[in-house]
Length: 115
Length: 115
Image (cartoon, rainbow over all chains, first blue to last red; front, side):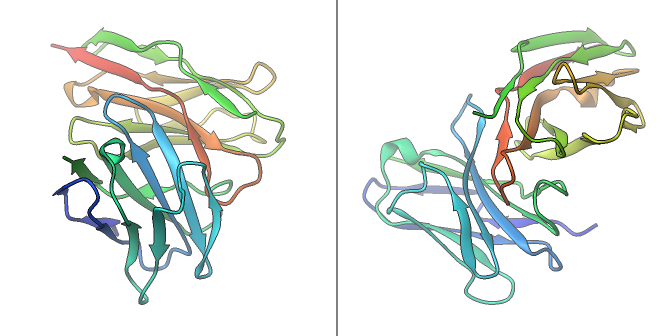
């Protein structure tokens, strides 16, 4: 069964550094998402992406965050200048249809640790 | 505002027994999907079951079933014949009104299956 693939599984970075989290969504899916989960807390929506542009973003997704689909397969999340509070599990997800009509398929996540 | 409430932070059940996890939500939408996701210690997010709000029949997937009461905005998950591998966090989720990607998650219920 096709899977959403995320790399790396764990990233450690120093405060103020830029990080790029990578995701390969399921190939025939059209909608792409990033969510995050701070340890012990609930899963929070960051951004959705469709037709090569952001379709929705949350308050968390400020100017420090950006997403890109540089080619036909990868979907990346960039944090320009990381803060301690960015430490979290970041999940990429994809779906063939709008989330109101189909479930999201999540990757295994990237654990980001900012020191 | 759209909200999801899981009132049971932790639950435990004996192997082979049945357990029900509760979820209530608030939405102004009339047609939507509801989802239960499982997050084992590996931190992966796995879809357990989904329910279409316009269907009166409760969804069933093997040992997992839901009790969906639309008027009461209640969406509970029943796990029959619990297995040790069911030990995980369980999140109830549904799409925020009409959006393409904003899936709202509850805070989760930590289920422990004991031998």
